[in-house]
Image 1: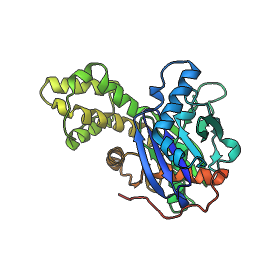
Image 2: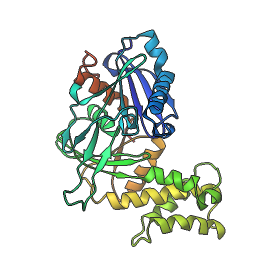
Image 3: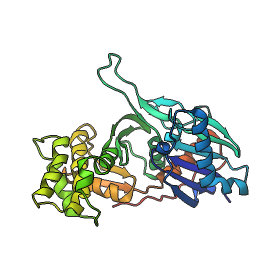
Length: 327
């Protein structure tokens, strides 16, 4: 029997799960409708956009059971989202309560938005702050699926805006954001490399070649190495169909080279996200002698279930069956 509608609604896409007792996934849907699709500054137009997108992906679930609670995390709660939800400031525990949720009314009922997490900037402005929306819920799900440990955990969530997070005693104590995924998209969709690259099958050799260039010490810098892809093509040293994998390697290597020293650990790093993207990060981290563990992408659904339980949206015992995969 369905107990909860759960959505991870990000910058470029949305995933919706119909969850049963214990957080069991009964159905899952994905749409390429994210924050970037809500154009315009008019709040009324944005509200209509989000209402329509919500109804499209899960309206039939609510039509079948109007009393189902609904909860959503991600950029849907940003300043450009459906309604701006609050932020919790690190260090923060991960027990999100009913008072932390933002309730948004819509024609079929109410959807509850999960708060994001922020790092406060330095008082003198010399160090900027940071924010995440959606990843905190994935982390809640990951911790629910991972055996408890007294050691700090480093959780890396690759994506449009990759997050490197340190968790200690079930608290997020610090995190950093990389624009790696967005930089990859912009590089290959706009500008000179969009005219250099062609479509092709995955080329791991080109990816590892990009890793070697992007992670070299001393480095000539990300922007210089990215342009190098065009020079390699012009010299006949790189197939245009291999440019996307080469660029991916350069960008990921640069990110790992800069953030790993700050987020190193004596144990393994947990990766959560798209399977192929996690595989690429695992290869990049292995170059530095760091082992990784990949947690199933459905951790977001389990995190939303845990939040719904803690906040009292669903009266049920949490699901404890592990659904992670280790590679």
